[in-house]
Image 1: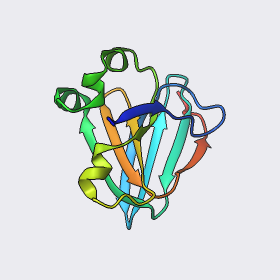
Image 2 (image 1 turned 90 degrees about the vertical axis):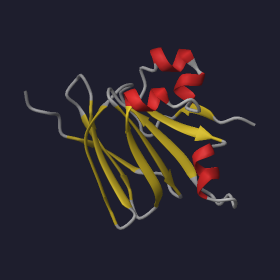
Image 3 (image 1 turned 120 degrees about the vertical axis):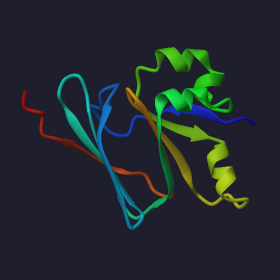
Length: 132
């Protein structure tokens, strides 16, 4: 069975597309802040649940021959969405031959693809709007 990226709606009233503002990692906790065109911000925090993560420039990620974005041209050019879960993840398989209850999350932004392997869903918070 090949891996499949499925759209994930992590919280109510979530916009479709965000860009990353910041990313920080410490003690298995990954915190990310995203913003959208409407100047709305959200925080995504994996509290002490991250097994692995990678942030890759979109240009290099698109060049990977085994990447889902390359395999599926429709996703590559019409994503319009930031939040995904990857089913049957080759990233998880590369980390371990045992398959514990890990989930592969993929965040596709304007210039970066952020992959996260975690054993719990993140906490999503709506932050105050950006001031222009």
